[in-house]
Image (cartoon, rainbow, N blue to C red; front, side):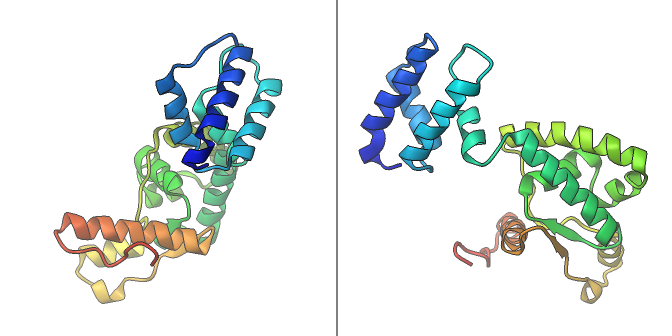
Amino acid sequence: MTQADFQKFSTHIQAIAECFGQSLSAQGIALRFRLLEAHPLAEVEQASLALMTTRKYTTMPPPAEFLEFLTGGSLEDRAEVEAGKVLQAISQHGRYASVVFDDAVTQAVIVQAYGGWVKLCSDCGVEESEKWFRKEFVKIHAAYSRRGVEHFGSLAGLHEIYNSSNGFMDALETAKLVGDTAKALAVMAAGKDAAALAEGTPPVHGQGQ
């Protein structure tokens, strides 16, 4: 949406709120517009109408529900996909390889909730633990998504950890890319940029690279 769409958006979103017996302040409308403006007005209108017919609650849907619809499903649905992607990566690459996922939220879950790639690979190796992992991962991933928790860069495997700790920098292998190649490379590049800034050096991965 553009600023030219604001008045139409305002009229539409107020009408939706009225259907739920609520009214929105000017600030509330403006905030919703900012949160949803990355999407075309027609798609936002379609999402709001769909939510009206499927929502189980009598309150106005929050912006997060609009975004879930607009991005192709619920946060839990996407978390299920990510859980499968992680399990496949564990089977394909294992704990010795370093990996980079194409989803920074997935990486945050692995690092913050499971103690890193190596520990996750060690703990999730049998059928029963995989069932437990899927259930827990989906819950945590959805929560992290709502809060915007992300982790950029690669997730170190045992080879990288050993070689780095012993100064064998020339022996470091390239991290395995998991998922969409371009997105995974962007996640890795963002981690390198953040590290460069932390060290006080200009990042080498700028926008559009």
